[in-house]
Image (tube, rainbow, N blue to C red):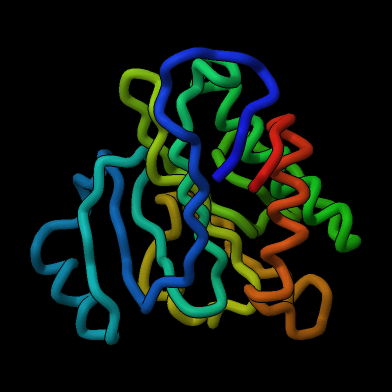
Length: 191
């Protein structure tokens, strides 16, 4: 649960859900290139497959990946989806910076280390209530991404905190620094 420092009356409580998924490929609302035969091909690699209402194309979620689902009423913060996505990106960039990784944004949504995506972002927002969120590769097995074109971006790759730091970085050790970075960027108190 988190409390925004800005005052607003009436919205539902803001919540962050953090998890690690079993292997699953998900598509967003731009799911056109993934007909049933692609779904079955991907399931053949041992992962589930789900179509979602988030933005973006296909990505992978699985063990070694910190997935964060913020359920926020943007009226408590700023009623701007663009601002919200930028804050999510800044949260991950801040976390990476504290770990010694130079990360940045690009016109291709998400957080990048050079031309490799370290964190995918795909959200949904209705009536200023957010859902879906971000997936930060901690010590994710990168071979899962070899079966797809991650986020539909040709010619770029994926990376993880572990690869960049050349040591094992677990989801468990990433949670508190992530929460600290989130509280800082969103100017809120986590409780």
